[in-house]
Length: 165
Image (cartoon, rainbow, N blue to C red; front, side, top):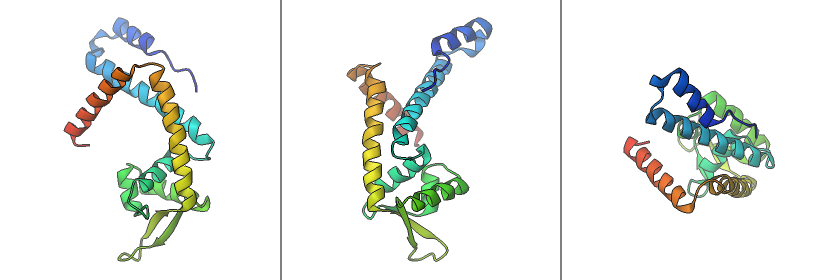
């Protein structure tokens, strides 16, 4: 994991050189953004063992989160994951080549194929999720108490629920 420019130093520099741009909202945004970057880097590191990219992992997670037989249409996948159709196509081709998903004919739309998680895909995403979650726990609990984590979770969930996203 590369060492990022320290957050405190960046904010102090902004306070000195552009004080009008520093607010509680700016600090909140920059802190959340940096925290997300750290967790994303951790996820990338954990997924290397499984030969997965973050995008491929997101696809497998979305499929595993569906009811059995763990399938979705490609358009539902790219909308759910906020990806372009071209980006999704590239990921799906690689996952299919790796035997982690299979494409089956759609019952009503013959132009489209449903994406289904294979047994190997299910096993891989479940193991990868365990690794990612363990890595996240290490990062989070080395820096926050259980009560702080609960409070942060409650606050962020409240915001996204109110925003409807």
